Length: 144
Image 1: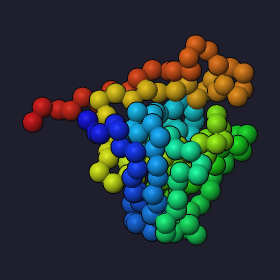
Image 2 (image 1 turned 30 degrees about the vertical axis):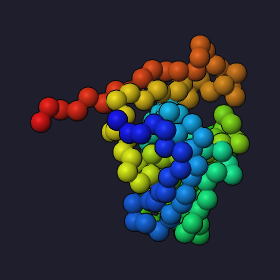
Image 3 (image 1 turned 60 degrees about the vertical axis):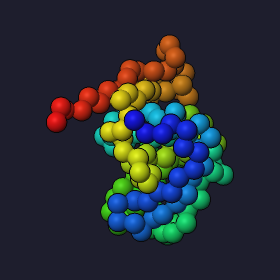
């Protein structure tokens, strides 16, 4: 289990062309997955950062932007290695979702459970049901 109280971290894409520093006000407690079509295919676990709390240190020019559906969310990935680093959220455009796999010393497999939000029934579409949670993703390590 990772240190959920991590307040700051450095991160990078797979090839290292994009490097960033992020402040995480909720630490790693905000770790989430999503069921929307894009997130379902991307498969990343993301944590929350305020817009002003993520600084690109190197490789800003290497980031590529992808938008779909309403075009509100901005998904960034490295144009060299293709790794998703972060996205500006549709549900709260004042926040970024940051790929935990890009953070130094953190793996998505460190989390025993990750809440999965219901992105298919997005609150911005007026389709919100319940608390907006679709379920929980669990990782159970094989015995050595």
